[in-house]
Length: 266
Image (cartoon, rainbow, N blue to C red; front, side):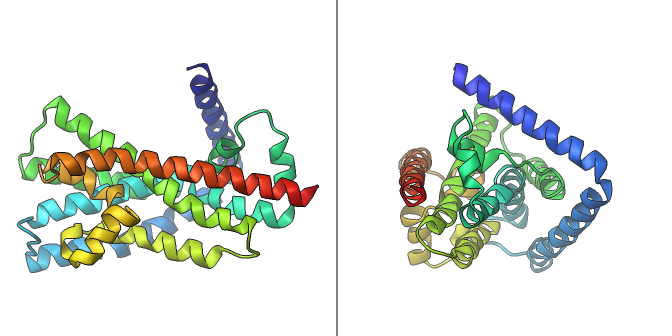
């Protein structure tokens, strides 16, 4: 508990550092905000198509489909705020040798390398749009507002963030073995875009692959599926176990990568 509190305090300091830097470079903040808003607008065209065609997927009405898109935006916002720039910096630190300094810091190296750079300009548009879309779908579909259902949705959101973190951390770690891994990072990152729509629209083989092999659908398909009552007990359990397993796997790979880096440095 003491370590958890310590790391929360550090996240607060990282956030404070970001806010102070943005007060000095406000133009940069608003430029990024505008660019992200334009990117969000292009993604919202999916929603427009769904409504204009009155699309129904596996019995899901357009309002229900927008709940999947909204959840995708929320989780993308969290990823953009906490991890996106850190994963890029992780690869660069291997190339330029700045990782040597990070290794000497008296905190968890994985925590420092993957959470120390926080950005709030990138996630704001996505988070606001996501919350609005999910709230509207929840109200329109008259879904249950019982504490258990809401808590379950938030719980699977957290698990989705853990899963996305674990999957997208692996490509940057390849930079410890290979000179460049940006291409692999872009490919794996692109897989997350499959979550913008219900996984029911994809072929059975792809659904199986994205649920049990590389469980990318757990990221933002499972939270709305839980609320809609479309997750059986077995799938609910897998949605809890898989993120834990993948996080553990990412942790093991990270430790091996650092050991390899240290051996090369010596």
